[in-house]
Length: 296
Image (cartoon, rainbow, N blue to C red; front, side, top):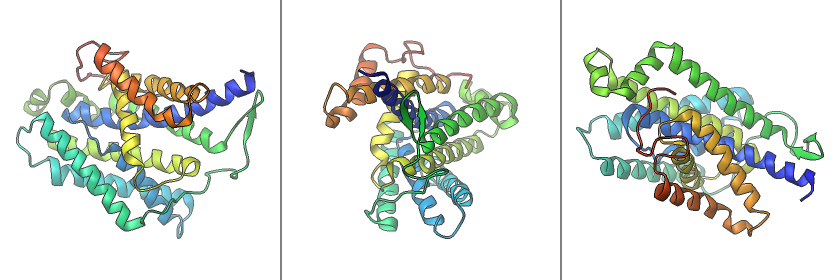
């Protein structure tokens, strides 16, 4: 394989992997605080992209993206307040079914609000045909935005969990929710905050991804599966490892195209998920027994 083609696959892989990592981080934020696997995470990403495309008609692009993130964070808070908070000691299966139901509701709501048409934001910078040339390979400026936003999210969350009072309280809640409650921490508020953060992160990723892949109401479920695969691959609850796991999965999917038909690309993530669940449930970077981690 020529070096230019190899680099082209590499850049495409790390771009896709960055998106998967952001989705996985959204899974981990909620899981660390509540123990809930939120299968509506993919819908948060799509909802952010859809709202941004509508707002971009009447607002400058930065304001449209900011408005989409804020609106999706409100939706995330409502998901907790309406569907999660009133439950008393629910089982894991019940929570999984509820989040799957929420994802269906959000998907159907987006279908009625925006119909089946494919929409896309304009590129943050550059044009559709512009590209950056690196050692003979071409990378779209929007892909650089995706990578930059992913890095910014990881850095901002690391600082948030380490240096802010709310972040430390969320880490305490992840370590021992009962003990945190006894220490006076308002754990219910932290659960709502975790849903807001997760939804906002997903919405920002959806806005960054929209110019590259376009946005449609039913994109959420496949993205959620890939994000969940990355979360499991990195070790459920370990957001730092999710970044490495996302890049690994993105590269595996992209390079698989050179060996297998394009139709089998999505099967790679499912094969990885099944292999990890059977061989190492704790993930590549976690313990064999899945545990919520104390650190981001």
